[in-house]
Length: 305
Image 1 (tube, rainbow, N blue to C red):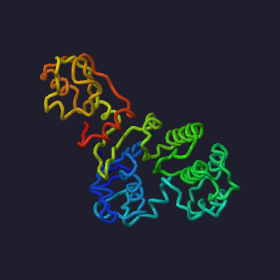
Image 2: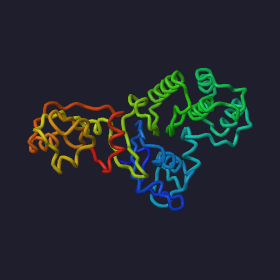
Image 3: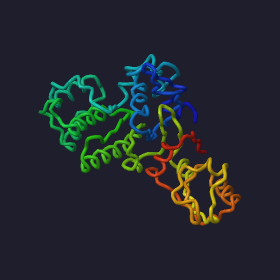
Image 4: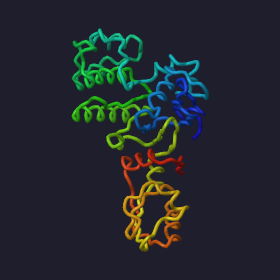
């Protein structure tokens, strides 16, 4: 993509904490106006990456631009244009009542929309008179969501957005997010390991494993490149090495009526199956919620075109 089409780009981004490598050469590209899912297990580096985009963490190596600004020199300007929901609360304002905290937060944002903030407070049933330190995790999350959205940012960084919310609140928050994205054309990065609940919102995905971006593609490209293959195979059949290299998961035994999930062009996988002596009966698709865990468990890095 042309640089004008990119809202967030990192080039060989490296971050260490002592001997631990949190980010191991991340090349991220988030299209402007896109909704990008950053998927990964706990400890994969998702939160560190988002904090680095805001210059809340300084990278040890590499370059990072957000909304056309260099994070090393324009951290405050980037944060002013970004709505951020952190994985956990910062804890600095535990003594402050939620309503007072939001008013204090608003003072830093000239673009703060008081009417929209009031609407969010009402819809999310925010307990404005309660001190932040006394709120449950879910109630504190609602306050963070109002703080992230009410200044009408052009970029959202949402780290485990629905963590701590009950099922009804999750549905309400995701509906609010969908409306905001549709109304504003905002760019968003959603960091979560609960892929299924945001699957309908996203159009690009990056899979982070142990600090490495092991897959990055549009959702269309990724789902076109990972398919489930139903095959009839001779007794004792097992996939040859070239085919085995493409397989993400063997869902049934290796005998007759095997079912395999493989990453790669469908024509290539089908040709490998035919060359192995098995007969391809059917090819079916996967959901993102099915495909992403397989990529996280794979030891390989995958490219999708």
